[in-house]
Image 1 (cartoon, helix red, strand yellow):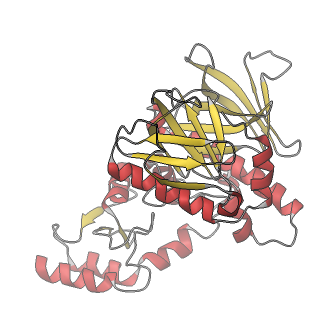
Image 2: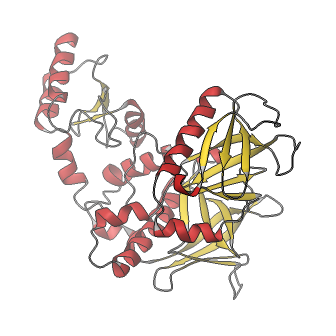
Amino acid sequence: MADRSKKFLLDVRQSPGNDRCADCNRQNPDWAVWNLGIFVCESCGNIHRSLGTHISRVKSISFDKWDEDQLRIMEGQGNLKSKQYYEQQVPACYKLPTPKDPPVLREQWIRAKYQRLEFVDIDKQTYLQGHKEGYLWKRGKEDKKFQQRKFVLDEKTNTLKYYNKEDAKDPKATMLIDELNVTLVPDKVSNPNAMQITFQQDGRTRNLFVYGDDGQEIVNWFNAIRSAKLNRLRIAFPGAKDAELRSHLTRDFTKEGWLSKTGPKSGNAFRRRWFSLDKRKLMYYEDPLDAFPKGEIFIGTKDKGFAVRDGVTPGVKDTGYTFTLKTTERDYHFSAETEEDMHDWVHIIKSVISKPLSPQDSSCMFRTSFK
């Protein structure tokens, strides 16, 4: 019976929509939520288990026993039918999770779909209101401690503000929604519900690190910011489709990690720094959670003299796994911790250099300081 059930389910999995996880789109899902009639990957299956059997009943395609009724539900339902109901009103701003996204995004997507039924009842999508107030734990710029701070998002005034004190009349900082970026960073902050807010302050890149008391809170903030940005883009570009505008809402860093770099003077030793590549802006920090980068390097195009190659220029000590970034200002020498990481950095930077400048890239070039 087990072998016959497995063969039957694998045949059903070949039907359109069933060959990918119903929740994160991973290929060839090995698990199923039989009472919902959907195929899911192991990671999403584990999240479904946490919802309780009154919502999700999870089974392995290969290793669990199946009865005829369960098999018929899987055959008759499937991922596409499930999506027609549970995803009938997913807002355009909502970040759909992929296998590479942080667990909190996948978990809240699954809970929103099947537990809270957010995409069946639009009134439950409170993050679409254009205004949100609440408390997040924010890391201090100087003392590095996380303290609870009041945040206020207001789409009409194009602002995200935070206050150091409950009764404060003036905000500690005001960020323009149009110009800020947010990304979920659980590993960097060592908190599953953490988010990084990046914006420009006095011509420099400023980072705020915050986290919520639970996953739903931080993902609601994340999507509230995306919703506000999308609505403002719709006004600015009335002829554009949502599919075009979505790519301009939020973005993850292209690559982050530890590298060592030399200073500008001949003979400077390599110093270990945390690097973040954001589109054409390569920033480096003493610590990944620093509020400001120590330096920012704008990466231009090949026709302007920018280039990257393995190794270092003559006279610079080669410490292994090195590469050089040539800019209009100077040569930057880097040393990676593994050969694989070095090749990855070189490949990614080459791809940046090969692309033409966008209008946004040009404005970034004038704001970036070379150090």
